[in-house]
Image (cartoon, rainbow, N blue to C red; front, side, top):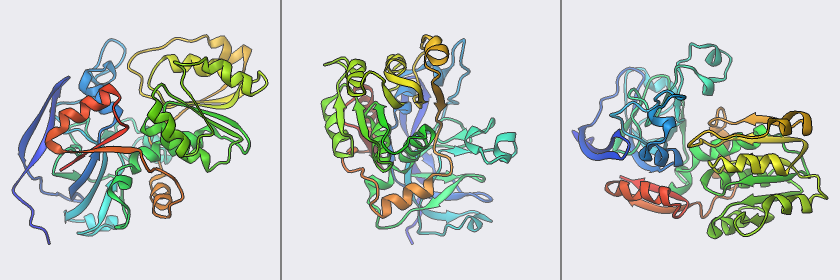
Length: 358
């Protein structure tokens, strides 16, 4: 058994742009808690927005403050169980297991939790944003009581295991779209989440699967993961291209995964009457649109997509059996001390998924 040290390194968030690598005491697991040695942690786009001070995370007149500094960020994680607190063995994990924890820790008491919609919990904590659940940009972390934890196969490569969380989110968006065989499907955005959506949408056998992004390497990867067509909206009129491909009707399904408000209006313009529009992104600011398109003009079905509830076992199974393609999504693995470079790569759109490896 690996000896657990007394201290560990952890990235600590104190405010927008104020992140520090500090030495902390390794936490001791309490009742129903699990101590995990972190194997890798992905840098999410939301981490980059938080670092840059997006209103969603730091609060403004319209959105309450979400981040509770000081806190250790990181929710795209894979690790290994090194200690169990009293009662934690009931969760089915044992010392030595590779494991992942879903990014949300629900209260299990509110109306949503009682109806199995735990991802909508009104009192939920999220790893890396709330003080009670410190994140995975550290050598060690705690899976607290009430967390949703899953065993991960040993044979699953690190880079794939670190994608389980974002892939569960991607699968949620695809499921919410209700896409059918033969549909024309557009996924706007070819970052980690958009590429995962392309990979899972491919399994639904759409008639035409289109990826939209402004970065050529991402579009190339989207093709390798299953997109039939890749469109750069900076090089051509994406809306007109989709209309031309569909006899002027528009796409059946549009999934917004860019995080840019302009992509909302792009989707409303290129989707057909009665089409299904899925909004997934965390937006840095508000956007406006012509609501007449949604109602009177097109009667569009609007679906929100949030997190990846109930889908982690499916993602783990599909990865383990090689049923979903994800090769190439992880482009960088940096040591924990280079966390600032990881945030910068996200901010500049370099690579796709960057991992921090303790």
